Each structure stands twice: as structure tokens, then as C-alpha cells.
Length: 159
Ligand code: ZN
Image: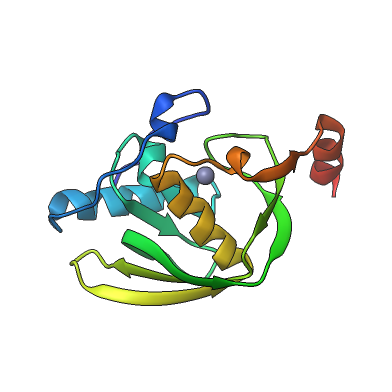
């Protein structure tokens, strides 16, 4: 496994739409492994392939319950609403308040191409939405009600 560089705000790759994965081969497995390692090292709860410069529909998520790998994920159902703090490894030090569904159901493929469904609530639902947005060139700043001010971030860091 290897760490990959995380693409930062201003890179146009973050606004591009990703292509589906068709071949479930070593290249995708290495990408998934590297993305998980990169996410963990950066203390993130999710990472999408465009954030490591790859325009493929691949996501890893870990909200502290183990790594979830999503290839070609789609949101097939959602309900409710939650409002909360959201940030992104591609926008270090920036935070916003974003509304997301409180429940999300995703259909995806695993690293071998096997289809499965997974449900998430609260933080996991938020992570599904945030990461799948990345695959469509949408970043959290496109979704926020407002960004936190530097003073609010200072207070946040103090707690
Ligand atoms: Zn992000």
C-alpha cells in the first residue's frame, strides 16, 4: 500500500464527473487500498477517487467501524434531514453547515464487482452523500448553507 497525494481546493479535477469502473482488477484493488491508507493517515472519514487524482467511481469510508469500499455507488433511497458540520480533506481547515438526508441507502459493487446494498444513518448517511457527490464533481461547498467564520473555527478547535 502507498499513500497518495490528496488533491486540494482549486484543482479542476474536483469538479469533474468520474467514469464507472468496468474492470475489477489489481489496479482497482491497489487504488482502494491506497485510498484507505491515505484516508486513515489524514484522519478523514471518507475519500473519493478524484481526491487522489483518479476520475473513477470509487469511494472509501470509515466512520470508525471499519472500511467500507464502494465501487460505482448510487443512492437508491433517502429520507429525513440532518443539519451539521461538514468538512473535506481537499479543503483543509474549512468547515460548513450542510443539510443532508438523515437516512441513505446505497447500491454499489465491491472490489470484485459483486453488487450489494448498504444503509447509513446520521454520520454514515452524511459520508455517503458527501463522497458520492465527489464522483459527480460536486464538493461540500456547493451544498453548504453557510461556511463557518475563522472565529467559529477557532472556537471549534478550542473545544
Ligand atoms: Zn470531500
